[in-house]
Length: 169
Image (cartoon, rainbow, N blue to C red; front, side, top):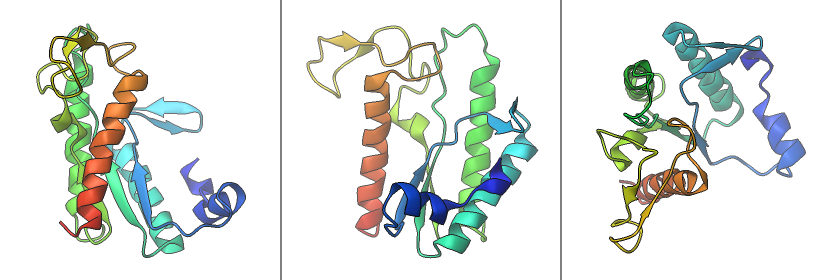
């Protein structure tokens, strides 16, 4: 429940009370409220802002990287996922550039790091960026969720953005 979030307690319990200077948030496209997943954009926006407000209150100097969603595979029979992911990305971007959050939240368009048409596809992907261009590999488990290599690619995208942020770009 978003109302029960206590980030400083979590940091004290699990991270030896280390100060939180940067946080990467990957919220995905669904929102669990009272053990029920919601795809209502208003609820997702409300809870995202509530989380950011609590974080900023507890750690006013913390910078946040708010990840967008990858667009998913066009082999997924549920085409509504891509449309919804597009709406979620616009929502996260809107939050990050709003005057309330723009001083400490930066939006990362994760989908820009993957093929725009087929996203994180379950079909074979050319390895030209990640190794031998003749090799191929899968980066997704179920047309939506990345596998281990897919998560490494997401982490790489965040790392690039974090380095730019640290360098003041």
